[in-house]
Image 1 (cartoon, one colour):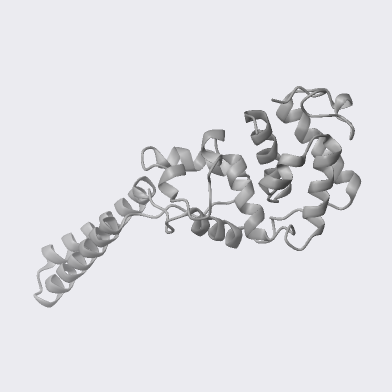
Image 2 (tube, helix red, strand yellow; image 1 turned 90 degrees about the vertical axis):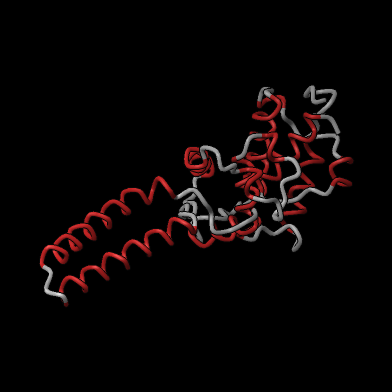
Length: 224
């Protein structure tokens, strides 16, 4: 298949949350052929959209095109979310996908540093209290309060990691946070056809009036 064909299949899969087998995609000549494939996959038990599948395709659609191809549940997160500037990238991804993403977490070394600092200062507080050293006690309490406020402010800046390691982990977390907001249903065949036509228009840049069931993708719609 040409680049336009691949992009069309990906867009349709993402829009409807289905997986079109390569063998079926090769047989598609007209808009009507594609419509029948989409209908059969939505209606069949193998094509029914579960929440995780829907979120996976929604996530894939939110990524730049060069990252969509070859994306699988087993894909490592570093491939789509590199460590460099991850907070800005993650924020942009959340806007694109339109769902709440799991929060970034701080690295283990940061958590250990916080725990060590807090325990040390609490220990100094007790030491000053039991040894009747007012200066040590008051100083330790003030440092503890300051440290807690400082760590609270720095937490967002140091939150640069995800708890999962691959795309599947991320998808599962997204579903958990948006369980009642995913998987919008398609109510009837006319609605499916309308969505499909708009997808073709968006992908190929043709007029909506040209997208008929008999229209051939290559000859009539100019798809490579």
